[in-house]
Image (cartoon, rainbow, N blue to C red; front, side):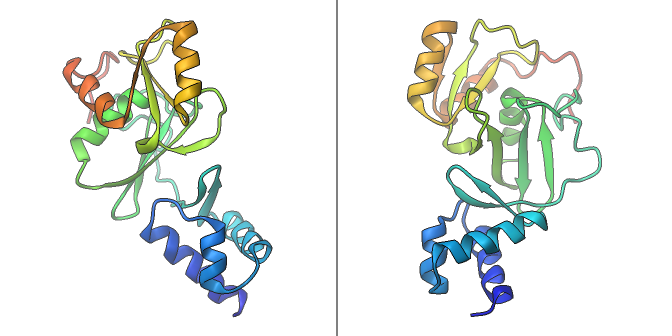
Length: 190
């Protein structure tokens, strides 16, 4: 199989699944994992996929104004930001997990993926599979209730032991933020 054929298969697989493992791609293409890694590297350089700690995910080009939170209009360029990817392949940024959850609640039928950073490890994660620490005492001066995202429960639990806060899964965090009466960001959302 030629490199362009494999790369098309890789792109197709990541568009049909949130996360695809290199071993799965290797089996489908019937080539070594090292060959797939080289293909993925090429696709990353082209901005078509992203390699994360969980596997390979789709990456779509950012839209104009992507450094502004889609919910509260604050700057959304730091490591707390979350990308929301829509079924039409467009995307928006939220300045933090709090605004991302509220924006998801507004557009849940259209969102296919939410990509964020683990608060401690600074690795890319699928936010829907994250563990959330709500209302920790660490002053980050973003939106309230403060929402921090972790990849693993163990790190979230240790963080909450030191800085306080409640641990929640994705669905619990969405409900918690909704019940907290929306956003205290001092800006109106779109």
